[in-house]
Image 1 (cartoon, rainbow, N blue to C red):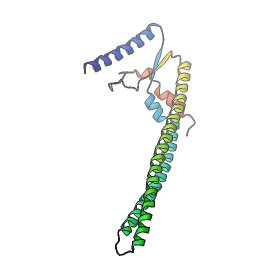
Image 2: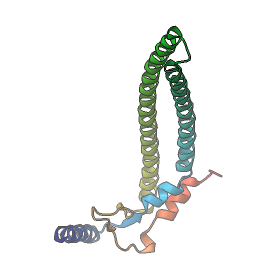
Image 3: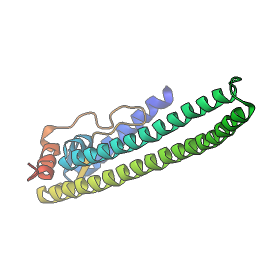
Length: 192
């Protein structure tokens, strides 16, 4: 616990030092809540909807594969049960046993296909989500930079993040230097 308190203190002192140095150098700082900007940006909502649509398609395809596997297992169980039915001739039981063995091989193949499908699709969704997020963050960063330049801010700090201990890095921001609303307005201009 002592280490955590020391880390919080160090982060706080670092932030105080940064702000003090900026003020001493005559630099003007602004602050932005990147989490809020990200979540309220219309393109984030579009990207989320697109990812959800793809995830739904993935789920539908997965459900189809799972149903196919379930059907194969039921068919296997019927063949296995028939292979043990003493009312059938030995030849018929042997045929059912052979059928059950072939179905078991198919089941193993389908299980493997399902695992591969799940891994591939999950990786695709994760990669696409990461690419979309990076594009959106780049667009937000550009809007923040442009706004900061036009308003004469020397630096903009994100106050939405927490330290490693889950404590906010920036504990207070004067509303006069919080540019979150302005950035959201710029990004969403013309989106309606």
